[in-house]
Length: 121
Image (cartoon, rainbow, N blue to C red):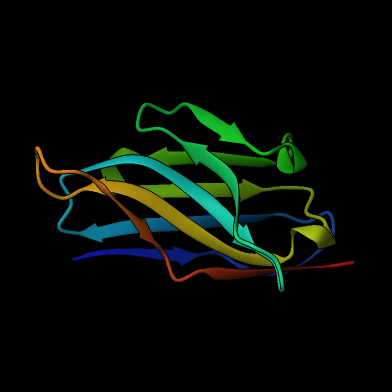
């Protein structure tokens, strides 16, 4: 069993900051890539940022320069530092991880339960 638990969401005024965390636990051999997605009401779930096990990162253009993804492999945790938040960043944010549970067997995608971020004008 593997669990991803997010924290750090909430209500913030435009221009403010939030830091999301996502900790993976359970029967884990190796965590490969990790990422953050978001889903606004009535819209599809979209990738926001991703980070490889070695620390290479990518972010979508709409959050470049404002959001930073990082990870702590020793803690099986990924973070999303969100600065200069805008009302259009309002969404449920989901953590995703590609996890190998057994050496030599294929890895699988796991998802957190989501954390709500609301940015007021």
